[in-house]
Image (cartoon, rainbow, N blue to C red):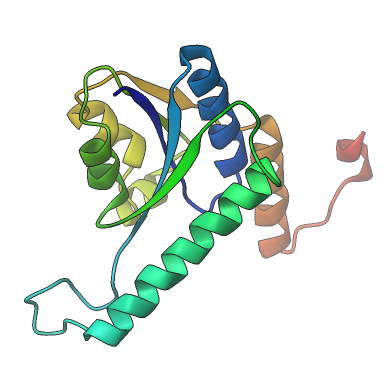
Length: 169
């Protein structure tokens, strides 16, 4: 059965991406599946630094709690006339989203934030991975202009640069 699959992270653009995915799910009259990918600390199964079952259970529980929190913030008490399911998947975000949205009739919705060279080096782009590997159509949602302004102010504060009052108007 077709569905709209949306990647849920913790970034500032998350609610905007979720709302856009909800609009698409309503238009198509299908279920909205929100996916939060998580990874265990210190390697995966079979690695020398693999953590034990209690730590994995704690990580899984924290991911489920975060997903409920994000969905509650985005939709409040409920999303009328829309079925929303949440899914936590152990793995990288791109691979998890591609795995969940494997039907060609699905729609995969991801955010595409501004990516500088340093961010690309430290954190690979989920949107690029999904665009290269998805078996279904992909909708990338650009960041809000307010998010860019917030990040600029944050950088200015980090560098302790003075704020010009004329920029606020």
